[in-house]
Amino acid sequence: LATEEAPPPPYFHYKEAKSLHSFTPSTPMIHDWREGRASQTSPAPRVSGEMSREAAVLADLYAGLDENDRGVQDMILGTSGRSASTGSGGVAYPSPDHRGSRRRGSSVDPTDIFVPLMSVRKAICVRILNSFLDSRNRTAFTIWCLDVESGMEWYAPARYYDDFKELRSSLSRIDKSIHDIPFPSTGGWGFSLSSETRESAKAKEARRSQLEFFLRRAFASYYRGHLHPHIAETAVHLQTFVGCDTALDGGESRISLSRQVAVTESSYGKRVSSAKSEPDDTARINLKRSVQRYVYRLFLLPAVEALVSTFVKTAIERAMSEGAVPPSPSKSHQVKIDRSLAEAEVEKIRDFIDQVQELVLQGCRDDLISISQRRDFAALVDDDEHSIRDGLFRDAVREQTEIEIYVPLRSAISKYLVYAHFNEDVEIKFKMQALADKPQSYFRIPKEHRSRSDWQSVSNILREGVGRSTLPCVKLRAVVDAAKEISSLDSEERTAFPESTFFDGAPVPAERRALGADDFLPIFIYCFVRAGIERPSALCALLGTMCDPAKMSGETGYYLASFNSAYMYVHELDLTQADNDLSVIFDA
Image 1 (tube, rainbow, N blue to C red):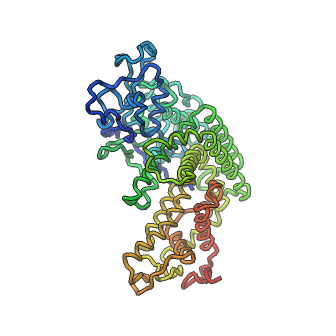
Image 2 (cartoon, rainbow, N blue to C red):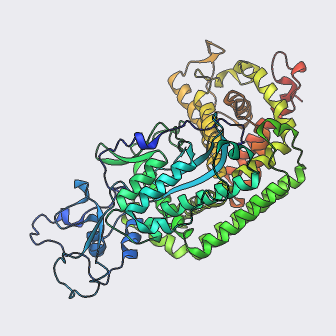
Image 3 (tube, rainbow, N blue to C red):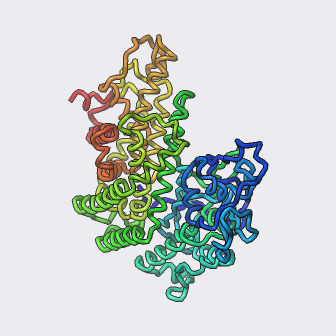
C-alpha cells in the first residue's frame, strides 16, 4: 500500500545516461525456419503486397511460428539470409505507395520498408501515480512501470514537466504522429516555483492525467500508429525515459534498468525449477506472458480504453470529493473515513475488475486457446480438462486487468483502506516491533520444526512479494509461495539434519515428524512478524476484497485465511500476558 508519505524515487537524468547496449530482438523464441534448410540456396521471398502491417505486429505478438507462417516469419526476421540469431530482427512490409502493385510471387521490391524491432519491448505498462514537490518546490511525477515480457515492475526516475516536454519534442522529430497526441500546455497554469506550490489538488490531478495520457499513447504508438523505419529509435527514447533498456546478455534478450530497483516474482526467493520440471515451468511462464501481451493490446482498443478510462476518472473524482485525499501528507492522520464506506468503494472497483476479467475470458476464449496451441508451449503438462491452461488464462487476464484498472486507482484505494484502518495499524506496528526479536520457541514452534535459518526465505517472500509488489494478484501469489516455502524449507532442513533440530541456537536430538496444520500456523505467525510488513490491517482488507472470487475457495483462499489468522493473532495479543511465549493465544 502506498501513500504520498512514501519517499519519491531517486532522480535520474536520462539525457546524460543513454548508455546504449548491444540490442537483440525481444522475442528470442521465434525460430527461423530457414536455419533448418541449409541446402536451400534461393532467398526466401519477402512479404506479399496483401500482408498488412497489422499482420506483422500481430505475428510479433505471438511467440513461435509454424512452418506454414513463412511469410509472416520473413517479416519478423527481416531480409533474406538474416536470422534471429544475428540480432537483426525486424518487420518488413510494403511501402504504402506500392502496396498491391507487385505481382504475386515476385522477388524483393526495393520500395519495401524494413522496420527493425531490435530493442523494442513489446508491452511496457506505465502510469503516473502522483505528483510531489521536491526540495526546490518543483512538481515532480512518480511513474510506475511494468514490463509484461519479463514481469518486472519498477519506479521510473522522477520526472518534471520539462522532461516530458523535451521527450515530446525529440519523439516528434522521429515520428510526426507523436506531435498529434494531446499534451498539456503551460498557458493555463504557468510553471514558476511559486505557482506550483499554490496549485489546487484538482489542477495537479488534471496535469497528471494529461501527462499520463501522452506517455501511455506514446508507448502504444507501436500498435496504434503507422510502422516506420525509426520505431526502434522511438522505443529507445521512451524506454530510456522510464529508466530501462533491452540488452544482450549471453545471446538472450533481457531488460536492463538504469539505477532502478525492480520487483519480480523471481527476485524474492522463489525456488529454481528442477531439471525435470524446468520445461513445464518455462512453458507456463511463457504462455502466461504471451496471453498477457494479447490482453495488453485488447485494452488499446478504443471501446475498451474508453470504458476503462471513464470508470477510472469517475472513481478518482469520487475519492477526491469524499475526502479520501488529505490536505497534505503531514495531516494524513487527521483524515477520518467511515470503514463501511471505504470498503464499499473498494468493492465497487473490485466488481468492475471482475466484470472486465470475465468479459475477456469468455469473449476471447477462442483466441486464448489458439495462442496456447503454439508449439512453444508443447512442453506444458496439463490434464484432460485443461485446468492448468485455463488457470494460466485466468492469471494472465487478471493481472493485466489489475494493471489497467487497479494501478491508476491504487492511490485512492490505499487511502480508503489506510485511513479506515489507521488505528489498528498503529497498534499492531508497536506489537510487531516488540515481537521482532523473539526466538522461535516464544511462538510455540515445535522444536523438531525450528529452522536453522530462522525461516528467512519465507520472511523475505512476505516482505518483498507481499509488502513491495503492487498488484493484489501478485501479493496473493506471494502469500501462497511463502506458505509453500515453509513446507519446502522444513523438508530440506530435516533431510540435511535428520538426527537433530535447532533449539534457539543449539542443536538438540529430535524425532523426525511431518509438518502438520497445527505446526504450520505458529511458523507462519513467526514469519509474518519477522517480515515487518507495513500497514498489515489495511493490507488484509485489500487482499480479502480484491481477491479473484474464483480463487477464494481454492489454494489461494486457504492460505489467505492463514495470513489473516496470523494478523489476527498478533492484533489481539496482550503483550502484558505474553512474557514467556504465545501460549496465551494458542491455549485460549
